[in-house]
Image 1: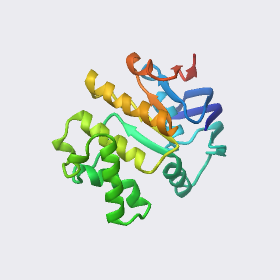
Image 2 (image 1 turned 90 degrees about the vertical axis):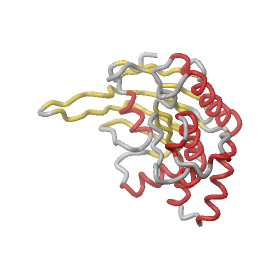
Image 3 (image 1 turned 120 degrees about the vertical axis):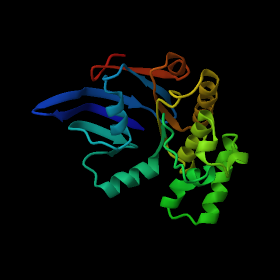
Length: 221
């Protein structure tokens, strides 16, 4: 599903070039539940941005579902993101002026699904994460855990092949983190969705099938 071969990434820092990813090789099969760990500055965020087709790489090969992801136009990149990837962020990234149902329905709005139909589907996904009765509430009326579940429902609604979760439990207490991880494990187990979680929490990583450790732009295990 996800194959990286000899991926290099540089950033311009003033007159210098910063070598952030140093020849990464990585394969994640369809249906895997994987965590990526590493200290600050290890290259986790850069790697996640490349996997999510939010950033390009300088050399190497990235295959998503056997298709090379390199130098795509904005339109093509958006197409592959919409077709394959669901995002979940530590900061939830919900729109404060829309209620839970409208936030979840947003990906279907971009897919030109009629409003009545997308709201109906959004309610089904809110029900799946145990928040159907919160459909009319805005994010600022919800706890952190509820907002993260809304974000997961939004990621799932477009039926992605891969979920990329960036520190999804970072802003949550222990009990709520466990509930969120249960949802990830359930969609992985029951729907075969590939789940890739970037985390610095050992408790979270231990619940995944495989841990990929990054250090200074290299995979060390």
